[in-house]
Figure 1 (tube, rainbow, N blue to C red):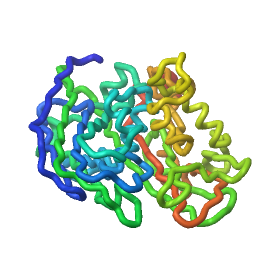
Figure 2: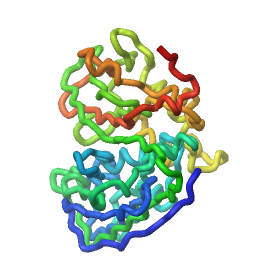
Figure 3: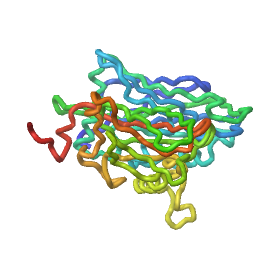
Figure 4: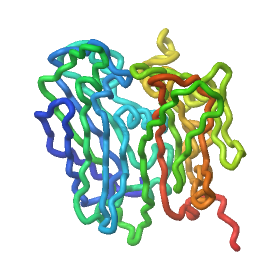
Length: 360
């Protein structure tokens, strides 16, 4: 990184119940790069049927809204599983305790140790471009509040008679900031959020509108084969397509997209073991074949991105009436849905491209 790091652990919080919200006030002393959220619940009763998101069903939502004096805007609004999957898809790793408890889920009592990392600039963006995506906290009028919404008993335990219960919960937040000493350093606004799309019908070419405007770093899709299970419900031989104005730029069978995504996901097991084909880290990142990732930062998944030439530019479509879409052949039905993830930035990024636009 260009700038010296500042790492700070905020005061620990405790005493929360299921369904409540934990608020961490983040001091606006230095620009924020990201954070590490650690949740340690003590289970007094195991779940009868663990939710599809496993241990991350306990972290129902992570929200960060900032106010710059003129308006409020979202920086982060997504669930704990998407925050973790995003981190892995960009080439990050998880700690051993989280991977261990992900595999065991909430099937036993006792204390669990779950850590969710989130870095505002995607891991694959290299400096000096990366440092332009820090969140400039000092310019805000008040300290922003990171909200962590805990799941309810029914969110975590999908059994008809849920049994999941906690007797205690500890929450820690470690912030990663940077000492930016360059006068008039340019910061670009970012937004990372999820959007739920239901697919009740079995049909080809079902469309989903990609939000405009903005430059998209990546688009993610996590599919649910039912209300209580992850699963790819693409039609047999069906395709997923990203297209704009009837011209496609990404067209691939989701099963093959999942293989392509694997190239950027680090394995957490030895290649000499029988489990080397997957391991909990790859299983989590791919949702065991239910999570798909369209990377726009680099065509070589897992490599570093030195410039922003490849991002998906949706700005020209603001006044067109029809922006880019995800077109998918889906065997939809009751309870089937896809939670899309959108990771984008706003502003003039011409200075961060290798190929400069032609002058008029």
